[in-house]
Image 1: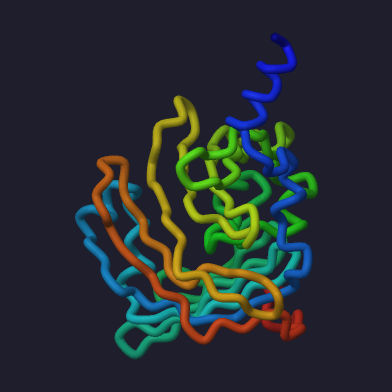
Image 2: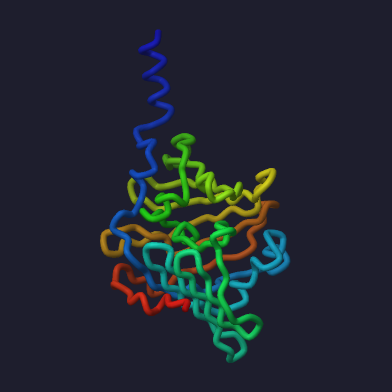
Length: 236
């Protein structure tokens, strides 16, 4: 009886690993691409947060990401250049509204990571995130994990992610806010491409808590592992 039950449970769970390390893109060093807003409903985006729709106001944004925790976004709005640069726990703004730096060590939920773009990288699980296996999704075959901040960061927001076990990219991400953990948004990542031996999604669609599609971004000109210079991410 026990043997039969064990076999049945294994069949339900599937053959995927229960360790998040099995789904990390260990070869990822950096990436550059252009995010273009394919659609954006500011009313529905505003239900996620008051500032969430800002990135959908730009026709395009040039993005650079580098391990660990380096991020840069360059956009143009009404002939004005805007830049947001993150290096570790420091974020620098160069916009008409605000110019200066901010310390993110007390606000880890604001730190940009490749998870926003459907990729899991080694630095994310080095004293920043921790992951708990939930199940193997029977309909998609994806591995499902709950991702939370390590306790020392004192941020109770969390994510539930679905990961393609063969291609190792996030196909779906649910974002839950702090406190009572209410669902804020759901992100769908699709149209994956294999670049430099890694699969990465090239489109993301966000739905608000009402399950209404609020916006879609497409990622164009994606290049991986170009050994980007650290000078791109200078904040001091």
